[in-house]
Structure formats: C-alpha cells, structure tokens
Image (cartoon, rainbow, N blue to C red; front, side):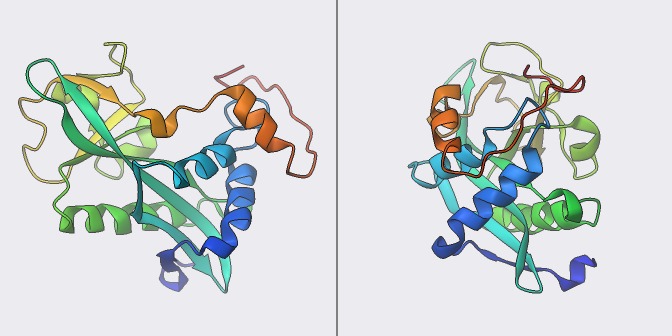
Length: 206
C-alpha cells in the first residue's frame, strides 16, 4: 500500500467502535496479555485534554488502516510554571497493514499541523529507534524526566520550533487523560468478542 493512496481525515463518531477494534488488533498481546489501548481511546475522547483537532484516521479504499490520538500534556518545570506541550498515543496500525508507511504518514501529517497551530513540542513514550527516524530525541537531552524524576529511554521529545524546550527542564506529566486502571479496561473489554490472551517473553507489563 502506498502512502499516496491514503486519505487522512478526522474520525467519524459513527466509526468509534470500528476504530477501537483496529486499536485492539494493533496492540493485542504486544506489551501485555491482551491490551488496554482500545479502552484508552474511549476514555480519551471524553476528556477535556483530548485534542480532536490533531487526532486522525488514515483510510485506504474506505477502510480505516491507522489512527493517531493527541492530548494536551505538561512539563512541570524545576523552576517556574508548568509548560504546555502535546503528547500522542495510541498510534495504531493493524497487523496486516504495518510496515507500509501508514504510521509515518500519520505522524508527518499531525506534526506539520501542530507546527502550523503554534504548538511548542511533542513528548511521547515509545520505541526510541522508531521515533528517532521521525526527529524525536531522548527527552533527557532537554533535561526532561518522567513523572517520577527518572531518565527514561522511552520518553522522547520533538521540538516544533527550534529551542522550544531550552531552559525548560522538569518532569513530563501525561495528565489524567492517560490515567486508566486495569479494572476499567477489563470491564470495557467485556463488550468485545472474547479473545485469548497470551503471556509472551517480549511483553513489558506482565
């Protein structure tokens, strides 16, 4: 599938369930047995920090083949007030559509849009090798740690204008938009078709 054949558009409320099933397929057994990301999408949509203006669906031949969801977040600075930034996640592409440039297309499109809106920076938790290809750097390069004050390899930062994070060392706070519990996710999971969960060696949240 060529990225040139993709249509990137806002999510239609009528396809909420379809999108959640896409996210469920993308993350099932990836980081833990089963997944919680489809419930996170449901939770995000109703949160005050959700950025619908930056959240999009990638469509090919009428089928959603990728999604990205954004929210407002902050850096609680070591000195001074909190600094508003963006975060995104889930970024999801179903298994049969991966490695075809869909994730890249969604990132490139939304990063350009965020720049045009005058946003300062994007911070995310993700695979450093993957996000480095999209211009992200370890957040520690800017003096930014996770919420516990620890340097975290997975915490990545992208300045949307040069020097946007200079002098803003502090702790990255995703905020309540990403605060979901396993019990909430398990309850939401009951609305979906039963699917077997597997504990795998590569999972990080066993």
